[in-house]
Image (cartoon, rainbow, N blue to C red):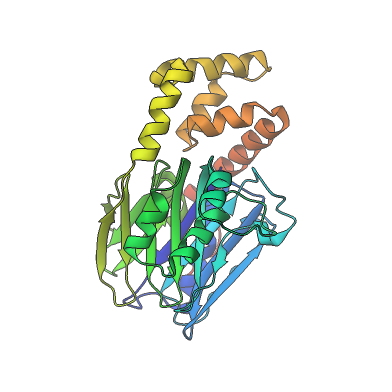
Amino acid sequence: MCGLFGFSDLQHSLTEKQASALANSLARASAVRGQDATGIAYVQSGKLRIYKRPKPAARMQLRLPKGTTQLLGHVRMTTQGSEKKNYNNHPFRGALPGGDFALAHNGVLHNETSIRLRFNLPQTAVETDSFVAVQLLQSYGAVTPQTIAAMAEQLEGTFTFSILTSGNDLYLVRGNNPLSVWYYPATGVHLYASTPEILAAAVIPLAYLRGKVHQTVKVAEGEILCITAEGKMHRNHFSTERIDYRRFWQSLCWPYKKDTQKQRRDLTVTAHNMGFDPADVDWLSDCGYGEEEIEAALNDSDAFRALLSDVILLRCAYERRKNPCSGVTAD
C-alpha cells in the first residue's frame, strides 16, 4: 500500500515557506500509508524535478523552490522491488519528445507481465509493477487525457495515479483506490491525498489553512481530473471494464469477495488466528487501508505488526497536533 499527496497553487497564494511546510505536512500525514520511501516532483523553470529517497517522510525535509505551483508526492510501503534501490521508488520519470513527466501509483497491478508482452515493452532495471504505466504512456508518445485513459484501460488490479508533466499539467487518475481532493476558494489552493483523514491531519499545523472553509472535489472511479498550468480544470473518463471484470472474476473464484462484511469477518478471524486483536482490522480500515491491502499484510505477520506500529505512531502525532502544547507553524 502507498499514498499519494500534493497540491495545486496556480494563483500563487502560498509563500515559498508555506509551500514547503505544506509539502512536509502532507507527506508526514500520508506516512500512515507507507514509510519505506518518500518522493516528490515539481516543475522549476520549465524543467521537471524529481526528489525521492528510501526514507520515511518524518526523516526528510522537503524544500520547494520559489514559484512551485503544482506538487506531486508519494509515500511508499514496499510490495515489490527493494526501496533501497532508489529507482524502484516513486515518482518515476518518463521521457517523451515533448517533455518528461512524473508518475506515482497507489495500488497493485496484476497484469504488468502480459502488458509488456502484448505491447513489446522493454525490460528495465525497475522492479515494480507500477513502472509499466510509465512505459505505456511512453509507447503512446504523449501524455494527454486520451493516452492516460488508454493506459488506465489496459490495467488490472488496484490503482490511482498522479501524473505531472514538464509543462506543469497535473493529472489525478482515479481507479478503484481512494483519492480525496479539497479546494480552498479563498486562495484557489487544491490539496489532494489518498484519504480525507490524511488531509485533515495535514492542515492542523498550518495556520493559513487550519479552520479555513474548503470544498470537497469529488473524483469518481474511472475519472481523470486535470488541473492545467493555466489554472483550468478538465474532467475526462476511462472505461473501468477491466477493473469490473476482475471484480466479477474474483466473485466467482473467491465468493467471500461478494460480501464486504463477510470479507471483513474473514480478515478478523485470520487476525485472531495469528494472535492479533480483530479490532486491528477495523482500525486499519478506518485509517483508509483497503481490504485487499490488509489481507496482503496479514500474509506476513512482521509486515502486519509494522503496519500497526506505523499507524499508532501517526495517530499519536495526529493527537499531538490537535492539542499542541507548543510548536512552530508556518505563516
